[in-house]
View 1 (cartoon, rainbow, N blue to C red):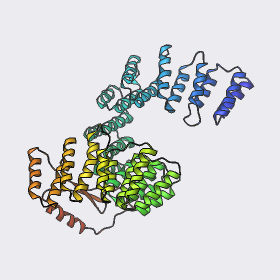
View 2 (view 1 turned 30 degrees about the horizontal axis):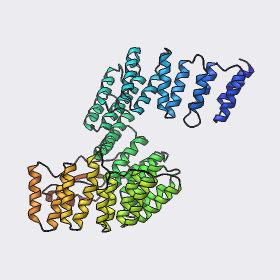
View 3 (view 1 turned 90 degrees about the vertical axis):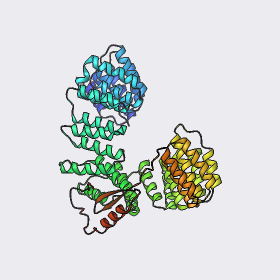
View 4 (view 1 turned 45 degrees about the vertical axis):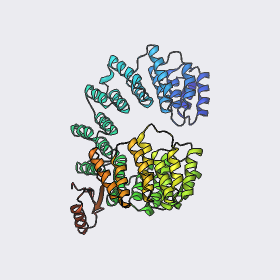
Length: 528
């Protein structure tokens, strides 16, 4: 190898930006290495870097290569995939097939990921056929990518068939399949698959725990977390984030504090995701001061982090502080999303800031061009009704754009029905209830209207509504609450006869004798 060649290759390895790469590329050409496979692969490898590289420049290099190798094709495909240029990814793959160059076990996972992100099921199935023809299903990386692609298409049945066709499944195969069922909302099948798994590593446990949390089975997620600890499996950041989310939704402060202390004990770095999860947990459990301390200590904050803090302040009733934080977020250059505006409407509702709520609606629609959904309309209706602006609230609901999802529109009408009921406007409440019934078959409208009749002294009408519910086989969905005592989460379901449940609550409250042990390495969640 000549001195010039060595120097060129050294320059390629030491590039730190595209300007340096272009200078190195010029040296490669002048040294006669313009068609050298190794030099070209190094050039394209830098172009494929998601932050520093440039797939466009890489494509110009690629087009000048007379006989590209499979390694060069793979580098180019990866470059476009990492940059999110999915059509280009598929274009390179098609060109490779056209010139009769066969893909390998590195090419196919990239292409399957592109199909999944494009939601192109037909193309994914064509790639699946090619995988079968080439015999690559025996490769565990290709097989797992194929399972992941089908779960991204919400086709868990096809994913399961591929799972059984793979000669030797690994823990990744089980993890992907469990996550696929959970994503679809089928927690039962996810748990059955979890139980079938012969070897459960941290990823398998984590996929099932996050599956429970994703589907609002928070207590089950905490129970499984304890079982994982009893099995001697140490949690990672993703599992901590899932468990903290469960604690936030259950209001389980003791377990949340235990998790925080456990994280500190492990000396785990406070990443953006973990810090946001802790902020969300403390805020939803009423410890806003601690949440704010954590928020202020965060070295960096993304939109999700800001949303967690704004939402926590809003739900704890400090609308003015939420508005101040919202303005600070905008000043940092972070744009709010639909979640942010739900929190801001909630803050305006708690603080009685009707004008600010309308300003937020205008900002959302006309500045950030975010189309309001049912929950946004429901919140703004609540803001206006508390200020006595029922006429304005009614106009907003009546002028809502037609939604393809009736339940979205029903949210706004339910808020309006509740507003009419709170102000004793029975006739208007009746018309709102009729509209809700047209949109969805749900007991909520009937129950609200029945309560409005009772409050207005129209007991005959209330009985008529109850009879109508029975005749149409519409049952009132029982409410469910959770209560944490000594780190044990207890659930209570509202029934017609609630006296035994109330007695049980008082009994539990009287049993608070021991302090929660934050130094223990395993949490306890009651099966009761």
